[in-house]
Image (cartoon, rainbow, N blue to C red; front, side):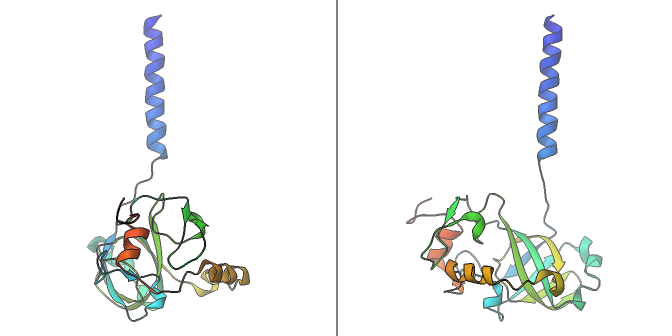
Length: 193
């Protein structure tokens, strides 16, 4: 009888561990971002606000052939991991906004899964390096994926979204500097974690 109970407990433990492993999601960077922007210098809030801001996406060389024909596009979506973001909160008061929003109604980098999405302009591609402009990423940001921007499916004119964006007050300032980095990326409140 005791052996049967131990066997059942063993099966429950194995099943639970297998279930947990199946539920996990793991990504590995395909490359890294290179720019002059760091936590110390700050970065543009959205790349489109600083079209002259330059950077380089440096992919691992095994992905070089995957860049074939990407140069035929002018803009790309770059999916990143916000490696400097610390923690998250359900409520966010965006920089320069007078209003509090739920996290998922903002573009805060501090998220349960700190994944970023940037629309970036391709300047040129040389081997495994994509030279880009209109950037909003810190130096060393891990790149998870790149996809071409397709205007017929990636662009929607929405009066409701435009009104919500105005209410958000999201673009009053176009550059995140030291104090904003501390609060909105590192999660520090008045110099504390």
